[in-house]
Amino acid sequence: MSEPESHRGAIGVIGRGVDIAPVLRQGFLLTFLLAFIGAGARVVVPILLQLAIDHGLKEGAVDVGYVARLVVIGVVLVLVTGWCLRTAVYRLGRRAEQGLFLLRVTLFDHIHHLSLSDHNEERRGALVSRVTSDIETLQMFFSWGALAFLLDGTLMLMVAGVMVAYNWVLALVAFVVAMPLAFVLRVVQSYLVRAHTRTREHNAELLGTISEYASGIETLQAYECSDTYVKKIEDIAKERRRSWVKASILGAFLFPSGEVFSVLSVCGVVTVGVLMGPSQDLTTGAMIGFIFLTYRFLEPIAEFTEVLDQTQTAVAGMRRVLGILDTPVGPPQPKNPIGLPSGPLDIRIDDVSFSYAARTGEESIDSPPVLRDISLRIPAGQSVAIVGTTGSGKSTLGRLIGRFADPTDGVITVGGVDLRRIANEELRRRVVVVPQEPFLFAGTIASNIRFAAPELDDDGVAHLFETLDLAEWLSSLPEGLATEVGERGTALSAGERQLVALVRAAASSPDVLLLDEATSSVDALTEVRLSHALDLLAGGRTSIAIAHRLSTAARADRVLVIEEGRLVEDGSHAELMQRDGHYGRLYDAWIQATEVEDTRL
Image (cartoon, rainbow, N blue to C red; front, top):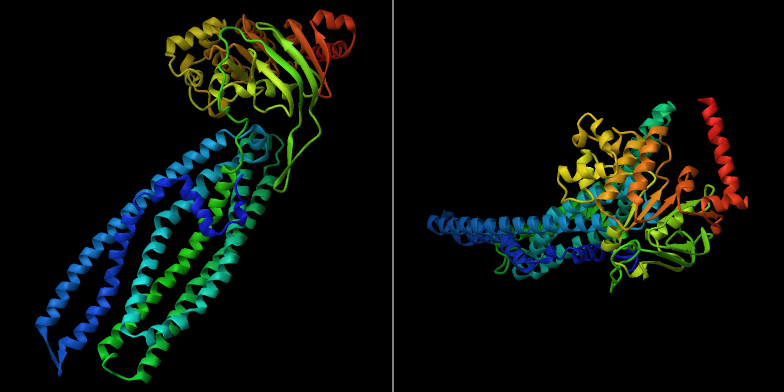
């Protein structure tokens, strides 16, 4: 991992952003040259003014021809430099948009590949704020702030050189009087960094909280506690407002400080110039031109102060973006992947233990083991149910088999190949997971099936429903395949979402099927449909079900019982019932609970 971003200066942070999006530096030398020429107009005008006063005015008369030539020269130079400046602005703005597009896509892709534990630790709204508002602060900087730095810095260098050429004494006066401003900017800048960092953190917290509450609106309304959470949103918004106001006050302090030092510098130049009196080196025109140059030299400082405020906002946003990009992706891709054999796949688990990493500050420590020394073999084509009490580790074992995480110790192989040596693309195609709460994207049922197999047409999708004996259910929907599922699939019931998820899994034609409590929280009719569809889908495939309803376990070829992270029983439903052990007690308790529920109904 790279050096922590909190230890980097603003230039280092922006530099890392440019390294990630190198298009930002493409053609920079030409852009700088155009900006250099464009800034020349501000230097040329005071020089032309000095020439017009010293040589265009002779004994009270105006040399019209000479002044007219200076005017023509000035107009031509202003037009040329204006074109150069416009071109520089266009080039920099275009590169900024291209670079930030690349940065935004890179960031989203990285977030997509983070481990599930990282997603669980980071609120979704906070991740969204990285891709949206934090990138927008960079967009403002690279399209405006960076240009201001480029142009104003170039202008100050050019003007400073001309001032020294005019009169080094007056130039020294201007520089000395303005020098304390650098110290003021340095001190305020350090406070601005912290202020804007807090603002970005509060903004992410606000977006995360709003996203969470919006997702749980049904629960809030069900318990009539929306007012309580509106108050929480209000409190977080107030904290964001306070941090923003504090940062704005610090930023507002910068602008007048630049103006004050500008006035002081001009006063110092005028005072020293008057005391020196007119001479061959300091004519009236030269004095007036030098005053204009002093203003030109200090004019960018006022803009610099505003740009500095914008820069700190961008740096704070960039630090948060880099913080995500520096987070290692989920289980890493193998450098030299090994292909899986064709046909059904067996699974072997050897001495596997697993602990979740818990973060403390910037360090990670391992929490107590969730799984301990599990070893087993699942032959190709066998259907297996994993059961256990809540928190026993059964879902974690399923995640390891699907390689959403790697074991802390031990090895898992599929088809004789270590999971860590299989390319992620092939693994997701051959081993498909149907989670406990299937996620459907807003759109139609057909579009959610094509999510797994984009090449399928409507006939192909319909054939999948027929294969799983779900054609009758599909025809009962108002629009069939064109039925809108709503956001997150809320237009369908929980059971119907699981039916669509099973068809989506069938579209991938996997060799290993992982189902996390696929028949939980559904009505009896839907459970029958699900069970039948599952049997059809699992036929000839290696299937592993994280069973909640033990009717699923009863239909499986084999049952694995996990308790406190250990494999305590392994056998068929009939064998385990005869032992009267952990599984027997779980099954009897489930039967009793089912009978009580039926009695109540």
